[in-house]
Image (cartoon, rainbow, N blue to C red; front, top):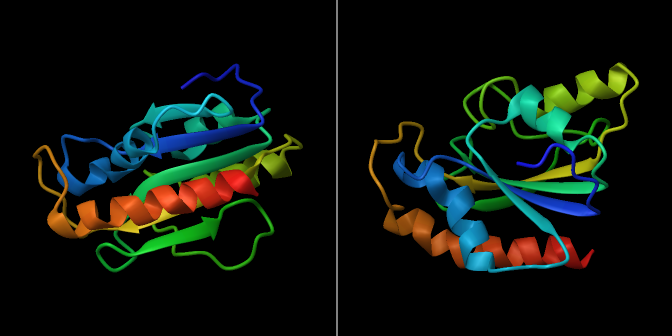
Length: 154
């Protein structure tokens, strides 16, 4: 993650490939391939540190595993303050203090925050320590890549 970035668009892959389906974010950006018009970051932690790293970026898409969705479901969700209802930010997804909460806190402190979206891919609530995605989540990767490409086109 490059905290000094001032890119127009950043795609952030959250997740730990050593925790099975939690590695779906990195799997999606690997499948996306090189994209010179955007920055791609990989991170294991989100929340406030990620929100702070995004300051100065115009738009951000965070690709992450989400136990609040059915396994293999893909959903594009707004995370920027004032974006309306979202999936529950209960601390189990987007790693600790929710990214949406952190963005709102920064905005309340007068810090300009980017238009931030989450591309959530449904996973089981309990993830084992192992390499590789389950078949259900692996089948969602092409759909998630297509969604990233649609987001980049807008």
